[in-house]
Image 1 (cartoon, one colour):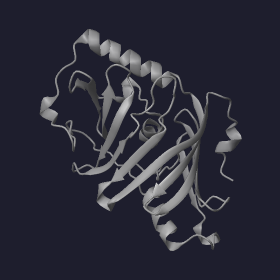
Image 2 (tube, helix red, strand yellow):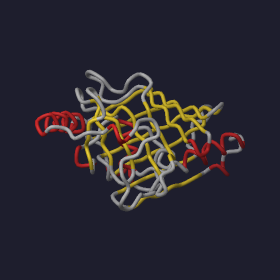
Image 3 (cartoon, one colour):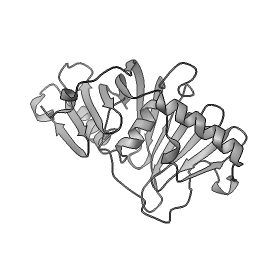
Image 4 (cartoon, helix red, strand yellow):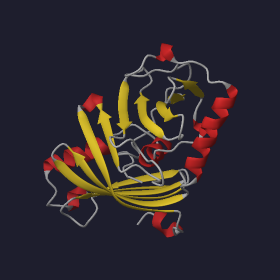
Length: 245
């Protein structure tokens, strides 16, 4: 899974509490309509089917933040166990490590030990670590899948797309495949903090995860581009990987 917890990972925990209606920066919420029960059931079945296809994963990404190039390795077992490491493109030693083991999240930054790490890279890394989404949204971004239970509301936008929303985020969903087309995250006052999209259209056919992900951080005027290098899904992963070194 891509990996950035607070890059895409601890990157988190900003919740809209209660009373937040559906909002979006690029479609009019007034266009949303109720989905007939039969159609809704089919959409939810598609979403469940896609989400159930990935239980564990190891994902390697090329990461671009402006002129800075990185690599990210993400290993996960469901949403309760995740490990994310970030590397400068020219170094074999990680500069940041995030581990989530059940409800405990630990972030370790090792920049002070890397003399080859430039100040520009350090700044880019700090921006990644500050991404305000939780591990569930990170999983959604990396895999392009979401369970229907994540949606507080599921409404129709048009003939091909549905909108899944809860207190934290708004997702566009393909009605025909159940895959995620985009994710937007807002802070408690309704300001857009993050938008994730898939330039190549997201995961399709037999592909379990999208090949490209673009994450926009409007408040930082920053765009993060992720390109999937390799991925292995649904193979056994030792719990030792999620132990803090």
